[in-house]
Length: 81
Image 1 (cartoon, helix red, strand yellow):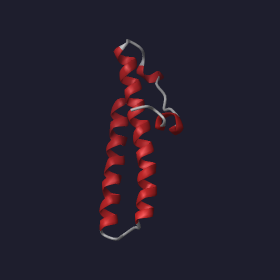
Image 2 (cartoon, helix red, strand yellow):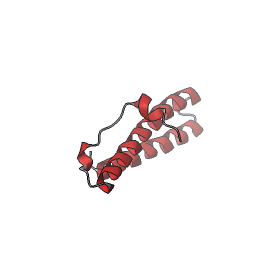
Image 3 (tube, helix red, strand yellow):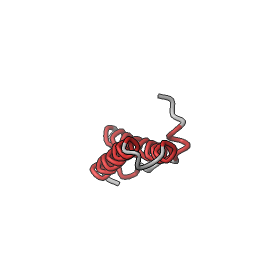
Image 4 (tube, helix red, strand yellow):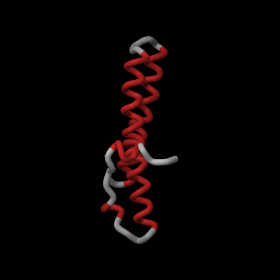
């Protein structure tokens, strides 16, 4: 994925997150359904941001950003903030 594709995917995930919150308020889904989907979205967002950071870091040191690859959820989710 190129940077613009990653950013587009991030935007789509954020839009879906907002939609889920609106649907919860409107009573169209349960809080459990919303929570489960939000958890999945957050994992996907974390992976996208991680991939984008990898690409930018490679570019900053003169390496090819196309060699960056998505890391597994369990690896990304266990990073120290």
